[in-house]
Amino acid sequence: DAGVTQSPTHLIKTRGQQVTLRCSPKSGHDTVSWYQQALGQGPQFIFQYYEEEERQRGNFPDRFSGHQFPNYSSELNVNALLLGDSALYLCASGLIRDRGNIGFGSGTRLTVV
Amino acid sequence: AQSVTQLGSHVSVSEGALVLLRCNYSSSVPPYLFWYVQYPNQGLQLLLKYTTGATLVKGINGFEAEFKKSETSFHLTKPSAHMSDAAEYFCAVSGNKLVFGAGTILRVKS
Image (tube, rainbow over all chains, first blue to last red):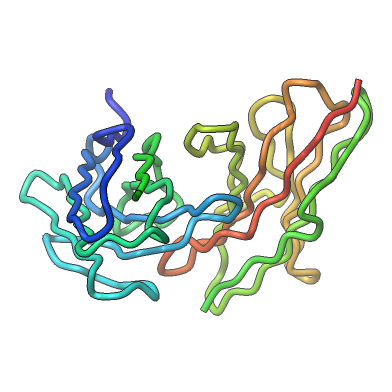
């Protein structure tokens, strides 16, 4: 039974470009949340998707957008990349009816140059 | 709303000594509480969690934590530190989303 998988593992982009990160949730999970972890900080909540809709959002600009597909997988898109977007992006999947059941992927390390 | 405060951004202990990492939380709903460990350049690994029931929770690698509602605390302990415990530790609380503390870097001296 596969856990949460993220791709790619590492990515280098130039300022102003756009990036798409992908996440496949653990089998049986129906929600996907995205977190940004800047160097030396704790993970910060970006948004959560459930039933293909954004259910709640953290304090991130509209440059950050996402999508959830019918198979529960998800994408995180970031437009007009800034140097400050360099971070580890973590995907977490879970169950809408059990907030104790959460699994994390290994993350995507994004470097903006 | 939920928030987490981890007291001490850096903790240093000798190998074999007690490990105590402090976490205080606030939550507008009954909290679910988590401790994660992160090794350099890796993702988060779940150590243990409290949801309901027994307030003393045992996790992997000899770690345990006790949920104290009256003190709004969920401190992480391990009786005897090992060199392999050196890492960064995050406490988190789950309400309608998972909110993390700023982390505590644990250093283990030989």
